[in-house]
Amino acid sequence: MVRLGRWVSDHLVMAVGLLVLVYLFIPMFVVVAMSFNDPASRAAYTLDGFTLQNWANPCEPEGLCSSLSTSLQVGVLATVGATVLGTLMAFALVRHRFRGRSTANVVIFLPMASPEVVLGASLLALFVATAGGGVLGFGTILIAHIMFCLSFVVVTVRARLQGMDTSLEQAAMDLYATEAQAFWKVTFPLVFPGILSAALLAFALSFDDFIVTNFNSGSTVTFPMYVWGVAQRDIPMQINVIGTAMFLVAVLLVVAGELRRVQRERVR
Amino acid sequence: MSTGTATAPRAGTAPRPRRRFTAWLLLLPGALWLAAFFLTPLVQLVATSLYDPGGSVEDGYAMTWSWRNYTGALSDYSEPFLRAFAYAGIATVLCLLIGYPLAYAIAFKAGRWKNLMLVLVIAPFFTSFLVRTLAWKLILADNGTVVSVFKALGLVADDGRLLATGFAVVAGLTYNFLPFMVLPLYASLERIDHRLIEAAGDLYASPVQGFRKVTLPLSMPGVVAGTLLTFIPSAGDFINAQLLGDTNQTMIGNSIQGLFEAGVYPTAAALSVTLMVLIIAMVAIYIRRAGTEELL
Image: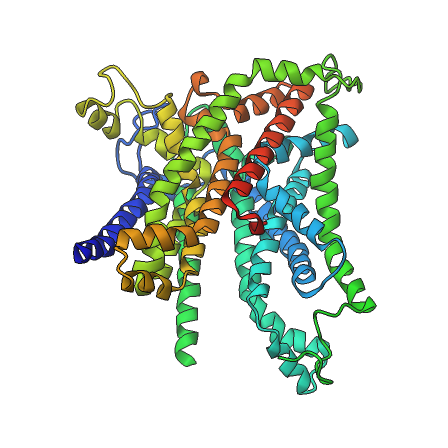
């Protein structure tokens, strides 16, 4: 009975786990297939024939590539902003004891616990009340994105800092390193992976955001907003080309990072 | 390790005035950003929810402390509210049921494939949320394979459809928020000391008993974090209901978004505030019940 139970828990769990992974990939197969689709009519979003045209002319649908470039710009700027502000905050929260620390923790947690409609709607209410609807655009999108990425950066970097051994820094200073030297030669390299994953997370959140952006974008169109717009009419197959390409770039980045990590561990 | 030695000038526990100043300096830029663009907007949202509903975006609104915005919103929109919480609740339970085995397999059974499997969990999510949801629309389409299989099994009537049903919306929510369940579950399962589970086995607990008495209780922080991270965004979502459902599947997010788009700000704001308050209340009760306050 026990052996049977063990066998089941060894293999069944893995089998179920793999099935769930397959489930996660089902829409990906569709997206990749549709990127090569040659639709019978522009109105029909169905799989009809094979073509390379979508990949050859990804920018053919009007507004697609400009929306993509807007999303990339917002994504990069929001990532830089949120990562800098969030990393500083994480250092303050982990390395320092000060009054108001627990309040700060709650305020940082709250945006993550708020539904996106509320975040988007409240910012819209503020912008309209203080500056009028004309202010909405690239700037307001950026402000909103930095705001909702910030908490995620703090949490990610904080986790890394909390797991870190401070005795290394102390050793550096015992060996006559100045505080600044100890920070840049010891602490920062150790925290850097945390900062990097926080930045990647921030970029992914910003790049993929639709709900908050939709409230605060004015006439500026990001890639998710472009997709939302065409979803109501006829959908160009090129959005699947972009989807597939983004997927490939992300996977390549992760695989490259993983290979470097494995290599480094071998050297050690 | 003693922090009192003469050569340890960075004793982190003893705040000196200069250090406290540093802490405030580090915290200030981010704190100001959150105060200006998270807290202030919330106050403005509450204010907007009490404006005179007779105003408009162009002409401006007058503050009339119109509490009727709330009573009106609640009586007119109770159905989307209930639907949002029901759909989000079902999706959260489904995510937990299918996410737990995956997280468990990655944490305990994957061995050297652990990192690869984690990457695979996140990988589909680099494709845009909307593009993936449109893919589901295609999968569940009226002439698609899934519908024919369901019809053959008698799960869907011959003239029935999956799109524009609650099933499609819940399926979309479950799919889209599954990684938010799997990752925290994995994080807490991974931290469990394997010796505890072995000890349970040594003490003649069957694997099932061992799971119920040791693994599951120890993974509760992950369960709580995962359910919150799934439930909160699902309850406020309107993308799935819009793309996979129709007007019979309207969730509160759709109502709020539609009202803001139509420029009916006071009612939309009242609905948003109500949603936020309800979610915070539910989360507070839930966290207290689960006994995981330290999560915050």
